[in-house]
Image (cartoon, rainbow, N blue to C red):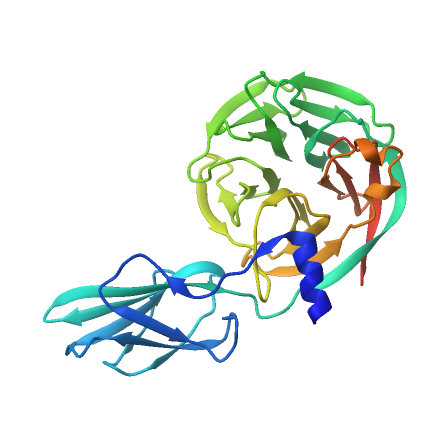
Length: 346
């Protein structure tokens, strides 16, 4: 168990969180649990310290969802299921027709630890060492790539077996290119700190639309399931975007059984799951897109050593899934190779 925790920390970069005070509120809300971490499906005991005041009723909520009504100065047991991640437990205290509140922020974790996987390289292909890879995705047997750096950012169509750039457009110098995804013959590309993304025709690379971010501070990674676009922003959140308006309509928070993931970066949708690498880590999370539960972690350590020029390579970044062949490809920023890999349970 200790080995697993250390491995997950090394691969995905997590920050630990526990119960803590939310914004200042009238009453002190106390939460206790029989386990160190509060996990979905488990129960916690809540109690409001009413400071000797007589109250009419106390109503408990989690993530703005009503749970149950408790009694004055009595511990009330509540069950927490979803959503996972960092949210508030809130108590509405009614006295003489007036409502006051008590709050505490918690992190609700997944109920199972992630399965740990490793990899086997089955093929290696040339990759442009000048490409600061930000997004990588197959669409109808063709590989598309987004690259970064101010003045060097681009959108590319690539022959994945030879590494040849078949088509390319450069972004204007004020834009730092980030992740991309392709859906319904449209390419969606993010920029980093500029607060905008672009939509292109997949065939001509003609720019069709520019869109702005709503809630997220930055643009990092993109993927899609054919209906919804998922967007990372360098925090612990993955946003769900409306494919028509590109509005950030909701989000999930990737979480293991004992930690909340942070700096989620490049994304790929594979067989119903989101695969996400973490900034500056050699690991990929396998995430349930409905709940945010991290179901697996792939250990890609040692892959960088297989490059011809590892001393020139930056961090691991880039996951692409070829649906027709059911194969996964990975690379990194300024890597001279792209690897076809088989994922194996460790």
